[in-house]
Structure formats: C-alpha cells, structure tokens
Length: 193
Ligand SMILES: CC(C)(COP(=O)(O)OP(=O)(O)OC[C@H]1O[C@@H](n2cnc3c(N)ncnc32)[C@H](O)[C@@H]1OP(=O)(O)O)[C@@H](O)C(=O)NCCC(=O)NCCS
Image (tube, rainbow, N blue to C red; front, side, top):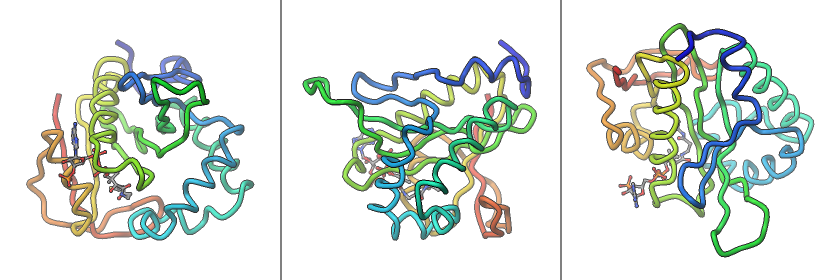
C-alpha cells in the first residue's frame, strides 16, 4: 500500500483498466476519447447540467481535450483519479462504448471524494454502484484512503440512493461547499475504512 498523494503511486494508474464486471470497465480517458465523450455529454446535457457545473463549460472537442489533459495531469499529481466508464457487450465484437464517468474527483491526504455520471440509457442497472465499489477497493487498498466521501445536493435523489446503497452515512445538515468551482448547498456522505 502506498501513501497518497505520491506521484510515483498515482503515476501507475495512468492507462490502467479496472474491470468492474465482465461488460463494464473504468479507465482514464485519453485525448482519443474526446469526441465520444462530448457526444455522450451532449446527449445527456440537460440532465447532467442540473447537478454538474462543469457541463456548462464543456461545449466542444477542444473543451473536452483540455479537461482530459487536466484530468491526466491530476492523476500524475495524486490529486484526482477520474475515469471514463465503458460498456462492452460480451457478445459484441465492437469497441467498448463510453457511457459515463466515475472516479475520485478530489484526493486530499487520506480522504477521497467520489463523483459519477451516467448515460441515461444505462441507468437503473446498478452500474455506478458497482463501479463505486471497485473504486472504494482501489482507494482503500492501493491509494491508502481512510475516508471516502460523496458530496451530493440535497435534492439529487438518485445520487443519494447510490451513496446510501453503498453504505455511506451522513450526520451533517446541507452546507455550502465547492462543487467543481461553484458554491453549492450539499450534504456530505462518508464511509470510514
Ligand atoms: C447519479 C446517477 C449516476 C445514478 O444513476 P443510477 O443508474 O440510478 O445508479 P446505478 O447505476 O448505481 O443504478 C442504481 C439503480 O438501479 C437499480 N438496480 C437495478 N439492478 C441493480 C443492481 N444489480 N445493483 C444495484 N442497483 C440496481 C437500483 O434499484 C437503482 O435504482 P433506484 O435508485 O431507483 O432504486 C445518475 O442519476 C446520473 O447520472 N445523475 C446525473 C449526474 C449526477 O447527479 N452525478 C452525481 C453528482 S453528486
């Protein structure tokens, strides 16, 4: 187990693939994913923009490429571990399809904050819940995290369901917090390992 943040530790995660289930995997995005990622964001734009402030500033491939560069840089510096969420049907020979994202949107000392979003066509199957389970395992066993958080707006019912289903708990009232650079009222759900 390695200490976080440590460049040499997180460095090994770039390009790494995490198999969540036989047809679901997580991996850091590369610039080659930019167009596909923008397509999925565009398809789900209105729904995602309600909860995720970065959506408003993501409008073209150039924005996506910049995000991907920053995300990869953050992995190298141990500050985040954001990954694309991919689906590949066991029976199809097609390439894996980008269907969302799931990862640590903030890593500070021994605390990691999970974030996620999903293409509407893939909701309601437990994909994000399972992906979070994989990430909690990675966070605890490979990044040495002791506390994992999910910061949710009080009316984001589906995200709260994910947190509760994973066994996260809260004892805090909604308070103003930074959500991707925007001040928002949110509840922090936590799990201690
Ligand atoms: C938050 C979000 C990712 C949740 O998507 P989701 O599909 O509900 O989550 P999961 O993939 O974990 O699926 C769970 C749902 O599938 C159902 N399900 C079906 N089979 C399941 C299984 N095997 N395991 C777990 N859940 C299963 C669950 O009952 C649950 O539905 P419910 O909440 O109505 O009870 C989605 O609403 C989203 O993209 N929201 C916009 C972005 C966002 O808000 N991000 C979070 C910011 S904090």
